[in-house]
Amino acid sequence: MSGATTHGTRPGSGVVRVTGELIATRRVGAYHHLTFVAPGLAELARPGQFVALAVGGPTSANLLRRCFSIHKVSPSGTYGGTVDVVVAAHGPGTTWITELRAHDEVDIVGPLGRAFPLPKEPVPCVLVGGGYGSAPLFWLAEALRDRGCHVEMVLGAATESKLFGVVEARRHADGVTVTTDDGSMGTRGWVSDVLPEVIRRTGAAVVYGCGPMGMLESITDVATAEGAVAQVAVEESMACGVGVCMTCVMPVVGKDGATRMVRSCVEGPVFRGDRVRWDAFSDGWCRVPDDAVGAPRAGGH
Amino acid sequence: MTLTSADTVAATTATSVDMSVDLAGRHLPSPMMTASGCAANGRELGRFFDVAELGAFVTKSVMADPRSGRGTPRMAETPSGMLNSIGLQGPGISAFVEHDLAWLKQAGARTLVSVAGGTSGEFADVAATLRASDAFDSVVGVEVNISCPNVANRGLVFACDPLASAKVIALVREQLPRDVPVFAKLTPDVTDIVSVAQACVKAGANGLTMINTLLGMVIDTDLLRPQVAGVTGGLSGPAVRPVAVRAVWQTRAAMLEGRLPYVPIIGVGGVRTGRDALELVAAGASAVQVGTATFNDPSAPVRVGRELAGLVQDKGFTRLADVVGIAHERLARA
Image (cartoon, rainbow over all chains, first blue to last red; front, top):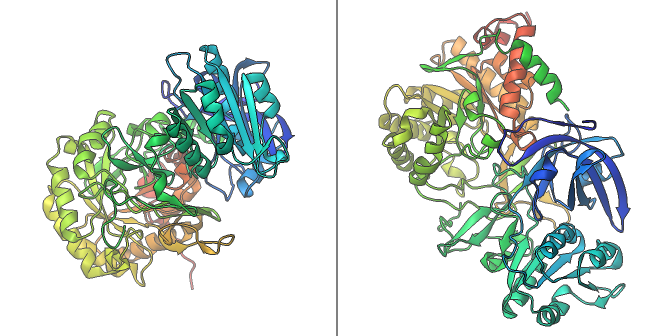
């Protein structure tokens, strides 16, 4: 099998670590869409899971892995299994990834995290993506339609170049609504402006969302108000992606009703929206709610 | 990737070099360990390698009660390292022994349990609960984390004060059977690390782990505010390795000069490769922990061990023990 080596994982662990060869890279608006050969990963992955990429090569000064939700996988292509991700160049790590050229190699660990739960019945679903947060939703739409679900998508972004996958959405969904903050494409406004109407019209039972925290909170509010369940994939910054660094935690209510700071890389990234303590997030910080298990007493931790 | 060469080295050398370690009376087949707080409690890394392959698995510092840790953001990437501000998140000692230690035992791991406390009495309570647990026979030692920088009151970093350090160590030592060694984990953020080491050993520590993270801070220059919610954090990664080498060196030198009784040193700080581990060993470390590098390479703790074995053999040694502290014999003549 050319282009990739598998190493460093144990059978039955549900995760593989591969040196993946980049076989295709293209610009899509403000983003880069990359395809890596990653044998063994595609077979294990499900929509909503993510991959963790090491950046900068073996002597890199950037040690932390960069995590991306899986855009799609192909278990058996010409090159063996492949995995696709969508990357926005924000900092040195993501810039390094977007500057890779065909045949360059990247250390990839995945699939990681919990996938989007799929409904047992063929109920209507709405999939909402903010910016390139839409990346995992097309693959999810396919899985839902395979189960007989009616699927509509809502894609929103600040401006047209920051939308991802509008054409793909038309192919994967039964209906597509687009919003931009500046009105450069679709309806001027936010996804939460159009979402109530889409939920009502389709009779959606589940709303899936992926994008910035503020958007996921409003998706949850709208879905709850309309009587639908929200399943949201969060974008928390992670150092490792595999559950050992404890940096990607967020306050989530468990089945016992207690709030805990849980790792979004292993207990998420998909959470039921109404379980997330959105009240703890503001201004780029997330505090520990006072009623969380083991919350700091006076003086803090 | 780098693993290819390391794997090749391992295949040819793993059996011909004696990598075993006598660590304060406990025989370990390998010098390699995870570093506390960089490996969770076993299950997560168990997906990438067999935790029984390590000399010891070092758990995340556990306190008496469940603890949420701090808000987020909790980390910032720094040149060849990172700043973390977790705040000792953990399940509390009861849940730890029931779920985590029990899992490590059935996985065949030798466990070095890291304990922490807000008061010296809490350290002792944690040690007592640990001793009373069913899986205690899998514990090869207790590492006393008196040096976590992520506590609200900087005065609570026990390891900044020899007397406070000694009190904690003595109380923990009292709670544990004699054949379970106690290691004091020290901070390099002190004027004289040897004086803290002396106090710990005198109080009953059977060994020293050095170093913990260094207190640091990062400002977000877009928002012009601290980047981590806890304001300050612990700096780790290859950037701090020379500080670890220095701390191990100074402490080993004090032993050679008779200023400090001989106790084994576990070296930790910025180890990413076998070469890095060899540096700590040559400075005086009998065992080596791999921390932040695990975030980059989840199998780093075992990979580094294979690389280290290869290097020890390449240099003509048959036993790792013969390399411990060797750099002290090779000083420039004045």
